[in-house]
Length: 265
Image 1 (spheres, rainbow, N blue to C red):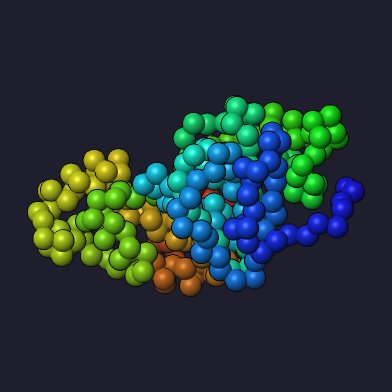
Image 2 (cartoon, rainbow, N blue to C red; image 1 turned 120 degrees about the horizontal axis):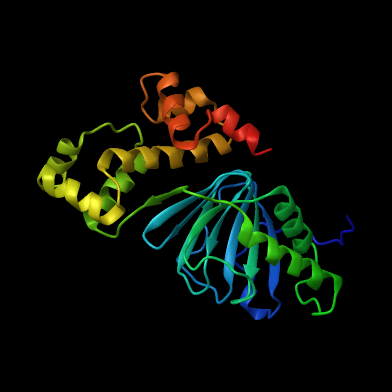
């Protein structure tokens, strides 16, 4: 694959994708440290945030979207969002001009194929101001035909702006081994158990137990993508045994942690 001398950048903050009118442009970002991202912002172009190594989390539309390796989160144009990447992450940003591809109108997590990954990487090495009749433009057209057809996966955690749910989410992210029951959380938040259960269901579409399990899954995927062992992650999440954690993981994603990450390579 012929490449020019462009190299991955360490932060996308200084890059203005909206300054270009091309149908698709890509940016390759490689960082040795954790990147907290910009404060909530939006682009005219839609943005596909692809994790090549490590994990990316993106908060948008009252939900936290988790992007393990081999996946991407799609953020439609003009949608406020902010992102965080894990240490030593390798990430690609694909910016798509409005109407240039049949992309979803809402945020979602996509399972990127090896073809899609290589096309985005190749595009990231090309000059962004390519001409419409160039080889790069033809490659971008193939990519924009391919991306809308990749599978969608349910790797997100609904997070409401309601203070009580936000309080719970922040506390559980800080201390994921917190095993307080719904009744104990209700007492802590000075409300009734029934009212809190109804609030969580209305705001997230999930029961408290299902919502906390999804939160644990998001944290587990992020830590495992960083290279932490299954044993360590199970302990971080407060599971009594590694087998109990693996059972939860398998129930959610259909594979054990080892099988899941092996399938991404």
